[in-house]
Length: 108
Image (cartoon, rainbow, N blue to C red; front, top):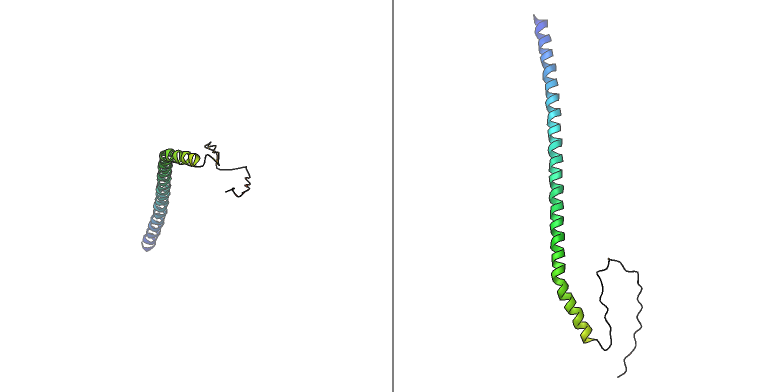
């Protein structure tokens, strides 16, 4: 009878170890799925925050455009005897023009 009890105990240990492995594998699957879902949620939240900040930046720029236009016009009027303003755009954020200015003393 002793051998049978030992055999049953051994089988019970193997079954328990197998169940623990299965439980751990399922838990790992659940952790992976939860991590993936959390990562996707964070990505959506970051994308939404970026979109909101871009929208806010565009609105700020539009609201300040009128202010900028008025400043350029004021400078144009102030220096109309010596400068000619050509105000164009918007342009992409690069410039292929090399500007060289030659300064001369004004006659007094």
